[in-house]
Each structure stands twice: as structure tokens, then as C-alpha cells.
Length: 288
Ligand code: AMP
Image (cartoon, rainbow, N blue to C red):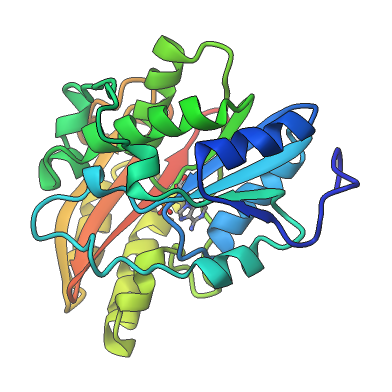
């Protein structure tokens, strides 16, 4: 493990700003930070492994952020599995920061408000009003608490990455953002903490998402209709959105028609499978 020959095999678990600061006072060198909501899977762990190569210390936060869940969403039932999460980060993270809601949002704290703007009300933001404002609020608050040098986010949540990149450019100019690829199960399904909600039958239907995304990789020209057909043909999949967007501004790209080449495109999809909302993303870069 580069840069961290002294990483303890079991991460130190801290819950408060005071405990975090006490650790920080003993740890010289750079810090890479990965915010998560826990219920960790190999996708999260791969982010931490990427972080390992980027800084001397790796901090992973585990916090189910009430502000990014809407009424009727799964905040209460979101899986909370701190013990196994800490085990999963053994030898990978130095510190697990697992604050309470009161630690993150102490009563009386003058929390900075971030407006996710027009991009924040499309796609995921249209389906989940206020979600991205809440996501930006917690990410900024966690950046302020952890004060990292580098942060790693997963490309699977492409719209989140776009908004976090903008937040960092505006408010954290010294912070380096690294985006890591999506980790998938062997059958192609993008790993997600919510996959555990899927019944065995849902799990099979859910593969339509990654099959559709694979079509874009195979032939990005005029792929949207074929992707849509793949998703609509699958029973048990209620498509919310499927779009091709320009990664530089997240604006939708119209159908690519019979163009012979295209610029960079990010394909995004969200669908409900059973009672579970799933996302997937694939980037197709013209320079490839
Ligand atoms: P979450 O706990 O779902 O909020 O995710 C925390 C971080 O892990 C985010 O940056 C996600 O994009 C990233 N992530 C989630 N699933 C995956 C995956 N399958 N592969 C890589 N990164 C992921």
C-alpha cells in the first residue's frame, strides 16, 4: 500500500469533531476523504483503495444524511451496518468517521446553504426534490469537519459528481477531486447499498440497466432508442429517465442520429425495480 506503510489493520473509529481533531493532531501528512452513507460494498472499498494511493491517510465517513432524503423515502430503513463497515475497511482506511446527526448539524449551527441550481433539479433532482441541496450541504459540512486534501467520489452517481465538482471549484479551491470508476457484480449490476432490497426476481430484472448501459459502450451513435427498448422490454423495471448528457455542463444531448462521431457523452439511467430505485452511468469518451 503506497504512502501508508503504517496503516493500522483496523481503522480508528471516531464519532465527534473533537475525536477527529485529536487524531488529526497526531497524523502528519495529507488526508484523502471518502464520504459514504455506509452499508459498504466493494464499490466503496475500491474508492478507499484509490484514496490510499493519493494521500498519507484515508478517512471514510459513514453518515446517513437526513437532509438528502425526501418525505416517504427510505431514510428510516436505510441499512446501518457500522460494525461490518469497519471490518470491510480493515487495512484500507485509517479512520472511520461516524458522526451522529447532532454532530453534523449541531443545534444552533449556522449551516451554509447550497443551491444545486438548474442541474440540481433535473433527473435525480426532479425525482427527488431537494435531494441535491441536502447532498451539497452535508458534503460541504463534512469537508469542513475533515479538512481533506483530496476526496474520492464514484462516477456511478454522475450528477452528484458534477455538482460536487462545482461546489469544490467555488468553495474548496485547494481540494483535489478524484472520480473513480463504477464497481459491478460479475453479472454487470452496479454495486449499490440498495441492492440488498432487491428480491431474487428483482435482481434479475435489474440487469436490464447494465445491459442498456453496455449498448452505449458498444456503439454510442444513436444508442438511446436501443437502450430505451432494452429497458422497456424488461418486466418489473419502471424507467424514470434515460439520457445522454454533456459531461461538461450536464445538459442533455439530443439524439445522435447518423453522426459518424460524437464528443464526450455521459449516459445516465434511473429506474425503479420492485420498490428499489437504482441508478447507472456510463461515460463514452470520444478520445478513446
Ligand atoms: P453512498 O454511500 O451510496 O452515498 O456512496 C458513497 C460513494 O460511493 C459515492 O461517491 C458513490 O458514487 C460511490 N459508489 C457507490 N456505489 C459505487 C460503485 N458501485 N462503484 C464505485 N463507487 C460507488
